[in-house]
Amino acid sequence: MEEEKKLKIQKKLKRNNGILIGAIILFLLMIGMIIWIYMIQNAKLEDPHSMHDVIASGVERENVYVKMDAQLLTECFATYGDGSSTDKRYYFASDGTYTYILNLTVSQFNEMKTIYEFTYDASEDAIVPDPIEVTGVTAFIPTDIREIAIDAYNEMMEEELLTEENFDEYIGSMCIQVGTTPRDNYVWQFVIAFTAGVMGIALLVIYLNYHFTTKKTLKKYANQMDEIYQEVEAEETNIYNKEKLYITKNYLLDLNTGLNIIKLSEIEWMYPHEYRRNGISTKSIVVVTSDGKRSQISKMEVISKKAKETFDEIYNKISEKTPNAMNGYTKENIKAMKEKDKERKQNKI
Image (tube, rainbow, N blue to C red; front, side, top):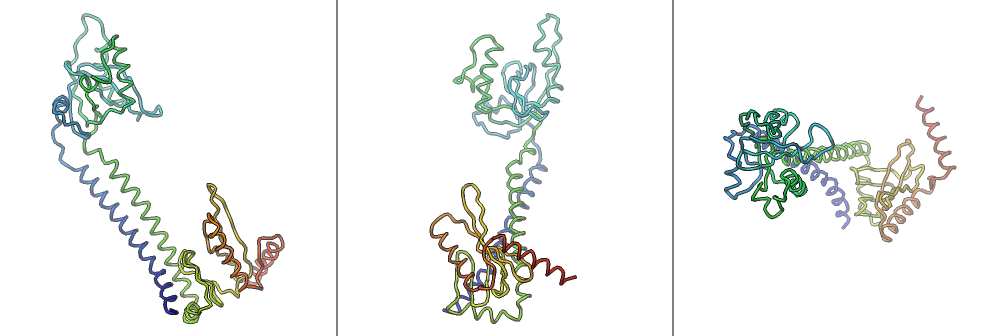
């Protein structure tokens, strides 16, 4: 039974290896996504399919590389964005037989200006320009764009031709993202790679902090570790597994961010600290030792009566074992600690 307490501490310390393994898995996932992106970008680009053939096949899917010969091009009827040059702009285009919706940038539209100007040229001697081949990938038309397209098309034709019921028959359910190829569509792979990388770095920082805190503590108490483990194994030791806290006869062991050992006789000041966020109260105990170091222990969310009772119990246990320490965040204690800090600085000079 006594040996179990020591083993629990060692097991909790080894738990940090799980954090490192998690970080490694996330970095491997990130590398895998980066390789996937590289393969997409360097994949062989096949010849584009006819947009009409893709729609006529009945197999509608996104990211299909398609083309069409534009003979007519309307003005922009819908825009997605914040008014910048990267906004998505939607246009009607016709190959002379079928009408499609193109998603063009400003520069792409300017390259098709001759087609656009011819579309709105009502003169009898207007010169018919050569069709312009556009290529891109298919993308499903958003619902709100469909609704705008119906109103815009009917207004342009000056009669109610297009409805929600016949939209797919007249226009199709997909538009063409002009200038894009299947090589450019790796958004979700990039999101996963970025997320995995950020989370991996966060876990690695936690691991390193945990590792160096433990290493520093073990070095500091190298000659007392046997004594500390013996106290941990004693029946009088108070163990708070959920809070990862051990209160022995002479020591305080906090395993939340690595192994942090505080000698109870060196605690000069302790006080409860609380802050609220989104209506949830988080409490911790701040202890200041004779070397001027401040440590935050027993950090917990006090969201139930039991949690409050546990926090109060831990605080009272430490108070009982540190009768000479100043207790509470009072003006007198703040002033006294400032004097002690000042004295410590003078002694170092």
